[in-house]
Amino acid sequence: MARERREIRRIESAAARQVTFSKRRRGLFKKAEELAVLCDADVALVVFSSTGKLSQFASSSMNEIIDKFSTHSKNLGKSNQQPALDLNLEHSKMNSLTEQLAEASLHLRHMRGEELGELSVGELQQMEKNLETGLQRVLCTKDRQFMQQISDLQQKGSQLVEENMRLRNQMHQVPTADMMAVADTENVVSEAVSSESVMTQDNDDGSDISLKLALI
Image (cartoon, rainbow, N blue to C red):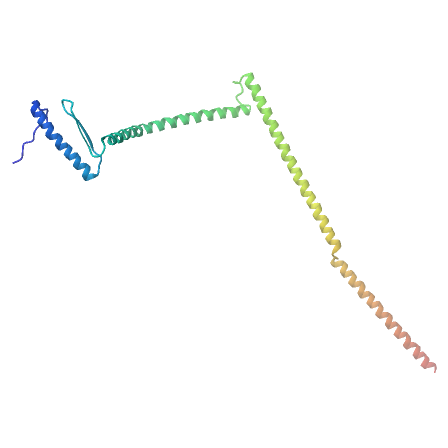
């Protein structure tokens, strides 16, 4: 037969209440010890009786477990607040960047000569000085680049002149094909003239002999 379930409510009798407290406390501490041993868990129990008497159980060190609990509670509170803090920080950054962008856009329009009616005389004078300073820097940079380009061109021109002179010297030192052909032609003509002279002399000697023979 099943045992009737007892209603959980405050025990009116002080003596019975004290007996029940002692029994349940021992059972609770026993279960806590079993949980710590079986599951290798840090378990701590703190119980105050109705008279204010303290009873406690700790599987290791009560102070270490309490410190661990405090640290965990603080980190848990921070993690709960972190999304809201991050969101507020992002909103703040976005607002700051938006303001900077608006100021930069307005300054750019002013530099282009737009929307100048809202500026005072002093602001216009300051802008004029800034523009003059910027213009001087632009002109100086442009002149410097021009001078650098002129110097590079002069250096390149000098290199070309030196290369041209070197090529001319090589042309004077090495005879060209045309000059060699002319020299060969002159040699051939000289040899031909010499051969013709020899043949002419031989023909003259033969004629003299023939004449002599005829007279005899």
